[in-house]
Length: 114
Image (cartoon, rainbow, N blue to C red):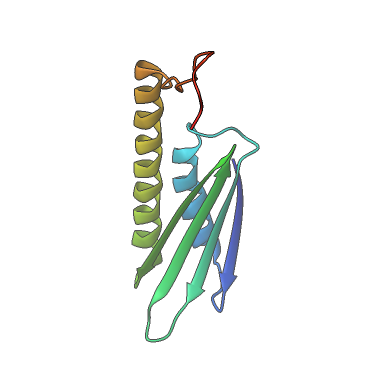
């Protein structure tokens, strides 16, 4: 997985970058190496920071955001949110595989369509 880290009104230090990379590697088992993960750190007023994460994989986009005072706990929270979205998608796909795609009602020949 490729990682794109951006800081808006905040300097992304090596410690923050390495911590983020370590946590993102945890999600690597769900995605291939061509997937791009965008992480944006924004400094807001009064000691608050905002962390946003966007992962685009195939036709699905996974989004998470967190307003926090500690960037490290914010990153952990984002990872949990993305994992929750992945679990929901996997459960929905498995349910669809088990039940199958519902058949559409096709009008028989000789019946009038209304």
